[in-house]
Image (cartoon, rainbow, N blue to C red; front, side, top):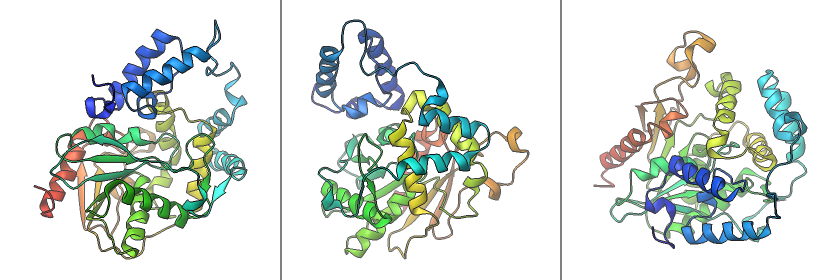
Length: 352
């Protein structure tokens, strides 16, 4: 293993990253987040982080370990209780009230530092991808680890964290503010060359917004890939299953990211900020790669017609169905999702 090379470039994906984190947590007796290998992206950086944590830990205890307290005594616990009891709207009202107390920014220039993409795959032949993290509490650059692994040796795949989900980060005061911030990050990452913007789930909304911003600057992306993105509309099928979808996030919390106060309030803020939204005209070709299985087991809601649960967008140039549901198409079926994406790009004549 190379000390200064990214874990993702050495074959680690979201599953193997969590496995290593578990071994390290056992060996060090430290409380370590599931995103450890993405937060400290090389063995060298990780070793320095663990060394400092061990130095700071008093004998007999880990200062980062959460205190023992009832599940409902935290914002996360209260929100989970609200979801489990069918009071999702009240749970989001609680998160929104807390989010309103957080600092905001109206322009990228107001930030001392902005999130930078992390490279998940390295290659020379294909147009680079910049992937946008979803604005849900579970999401982050780790959601693309398995997807990106299919492109190693072929193309650079970068994943961009969403501003406001990190500890103490300011939230965008407007949707234009986050679109400008992320468009600037794309340009810093790939320069003026061609780029494909990729968004899984709600990350697709951010990818479309950045695409529109880049287009207005005369630099439209080569293409936009939406991975099971539900457009933010009042009649979206996603809303019908919101309680079950949130349950799916809580089920995956131990594997991917701790849904703490920063993440939960950021999720609520973005959902409220974006509301119902449709991007302006886009010159770039857009593909919707969507799941072929419903997001919840049929037994929970009875037989369902595809139009009742499947994502759709009439302005997508191409729609492709792939194996898996909303979650598993980027987990156990990530390879087939990546293959479908690559084949579509090949059909455009952009990649060999």
